[in-house]
Length: 131
Image 1 (cartoon, rainbow, N blue to C red):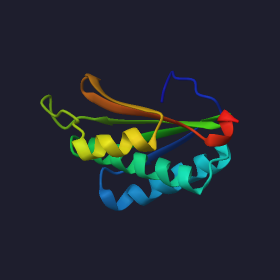
Image 2 (image 1 turned 60 degrees about the horizontal axis):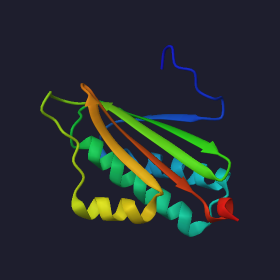
Image 3 (image 1 turned 90 degrees about the vertical axis):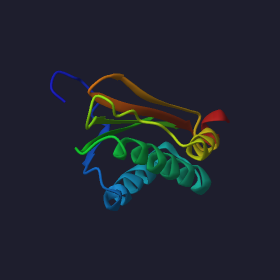
Image 4 (image 1 turned 180 degrees about the vertical axis):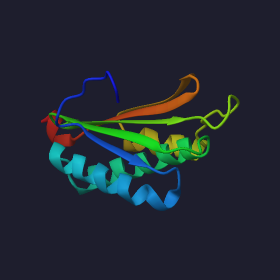
């Protein structure tokens, strides 16, 4: 990203908008969860959340999805971005996906106000961060 400063420990991943490449996003999410000290269940929750939100973007884009993974203390923040395929493409979450995300993350948001870009942000804090 030109002109945007991000901490050196943030990890950036660019994947094609194709479900066969979601494995890479899930692997990087698991790595971020490990660096944040998440247990197995928290790690799986983060992997599932990334999967759901990437699918949401894949439904509205033909281009690549840019993912940024940031580990801060005992938490992980992930931001996904893509260019919408058309002015009428709206990223909508299925109610089942929303329910999954509510239980798997501390917070999430799908943002489509900056057309042509659509994006999501999700955050999760591990149990150990609360101790």
